[in-house]
Figure (tube, rainbow, N blue to C red):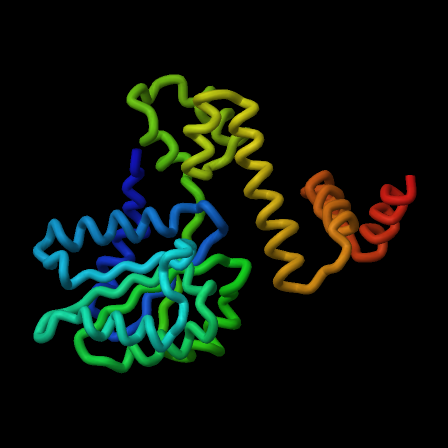
Length: 242
């Protein structure tokens, strides 16, 4: 079931055809690709021809990531005399992607949309790479209001809210937990491992995964408490030693 992310869809519609690059960022599995899918459907429902829309997902190994080849393919598929809507999903997987984005941005007749993971596309870096030419839409997992759309029965809100607080708002996690608690927990653990360990280590060059995980556990266990680098380092090292 696709949840209509109305807040984010409205933002995209407001920016439609504006001379600016639309960049959707967010944590992994928060629904960036699905948002683009929903938006493309609405464009076509509102009269945009299918051939005016090009979509590329760079998590797909079959999608070329060479910016020269990509630029050529996109250019050759443009519908002349019409507005063309170009969607580049998980663009951080393309080396020198900002050069591709810049080149497409300056061409007439292109409305450009990008998505990228927060781990690789922070706001400060976007400002440097796409200075003055973009607007960022930061997408979050489902709100409780959106979460309720997954249910036909809208009663017993206290129970549903408790489940939401326990299981979180990742869209796919809902389906996993409906099958079994263990499947849902395993799914969330996979997201955590990918974000906290793989992405952080890859991005920041951390070379000790065990220390990083101890720090994260300590911070999670002390939400609402004052912490400092000194006591964090002491307790994490103590935990590692014993």
